[in-house]
Length: 238
Image (cartoon, rainbow, N blue to C red; front, top):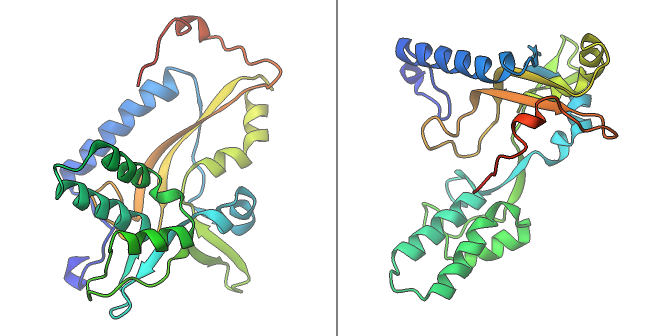
């Protein structure tokens, strides 16, 4: 949209990228869905509010946001903290290992702090906005795109932030389709939408993106799987 000024976090794919995306989806589908006989679905991108209210997304699908107190520009608080710690460590190559580990521990937990805790840490690490002044107090920002369904405007909906919910709400139909047999896996390839506070890192953090999702459903009283024998002796290492 650059001819109209552009907007962050939205990308068009040209011919080479379209071909690459199609090849990646084809490979993913063959490797997972076809090889494992998974049940594939294509659910709507528009999701009624009760679905996402039940899943917790309406109340908890949030990131903590801060603003530059003069310009009003918005920033994701945990990323500011992570970047500040990177700068601190890089600018102090002789920092004692124990002190460095303490900073890295804070960095790893950046997205788990409460608003009060992250406000204190932004002050501690001297994080300031482009205006040179401290940021505003942090507050939760819901990452879902909200809209209304129908002309009356009384039915609230959201563009789905992930593809899992469509598989969950169709569990009964999937089970019936699978002749009531478990375990089984369901998969979906499609678009997700997140109103990112500060899109960056190229195509890694954008506001509209394609994802592939798999949900495995098992009987809690019988977790045996026909393919277990083929993997039971494999060791996983980090």
